[in-house]
Image (cartoon, rainbow, N blue to C red; front, side):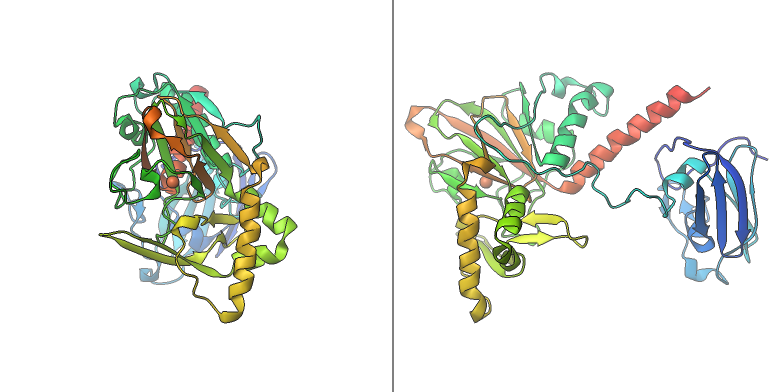
Length: 408
Ligand SMILES: [Fe+2]
């Protein structure tokens, strides 16, 4: 009998929060009791497909290779025990296959767990602005000199990702001001999402602009690229130069504004979560068009995204009777967008970057006077998935360190 715990069907580290004390079973159900008194139940079919052996999971990739439907019958339990390593050992029939399960993994994946597996990694907290409000700000001097995936990198990256996941926004300061440093920063999180504006885009006034962003005029609060089937979940704006007068940045939490709309103007909320607006970015060589409600909820009824960008709205084409209510609701929303209580304002300094959830936050800027100096931001997009994956990797590294520290 093995004295080592079995591998798990993933690459993660699973600390043992409680030990298995007792097991009972019927053909289709295994019930275990843990050392803290809790009971967990697992269906035989669920256990069979979540085994970690090489008939179930490709050991090279830890991806499943078992197709349950090729088993000759529904997998049932013919024996169950806890071995001396503390693993759950199950014999499955009709295969007559003995499989071992890691108690830390089992406990973490008990589907009766009170904690919701679909809950956000970091609780979402909406925020207001106002004159003394500012973004969460971290000193990132030296971040780009740290070893990737090191504890030194994590010391800045972990709180930064937490702010992005929870509040939709973080500002890092004291980064290098060499062009394209943003690419090095982005790589610390994940791959960038290229668009028709490139991998990286330069936000500065330029001749023959293909977006209002590339002029010196004021930009109203907006998300970028609502003209896409899914607009990028993350945007970074990295300041390389800023010596102009004006051009102050404005940011607001689109989720806070949506909540205010729901609370104060429920009929406008109902309309904006239902009527599909047209979003269009038709330039000389590209033609992006998408239709979606301005406020969208996920399958759980939580806010998923906002698509607010007046200069990227195409002509509304909806049911005749929805047209006036839609404009009524739009103007109600626009009045909220002008309320300074929602806005934080700040000036970019060279070496600053703001990283924000582009499907949640609205960004805007004042007009600036190009003849007074230079304003040069570089930007890029990414997906929310990259932030979540990177944050999970931080959590995994922390668990692994904890396991190592606890090892006898
Ligand atoms: Fe923008």
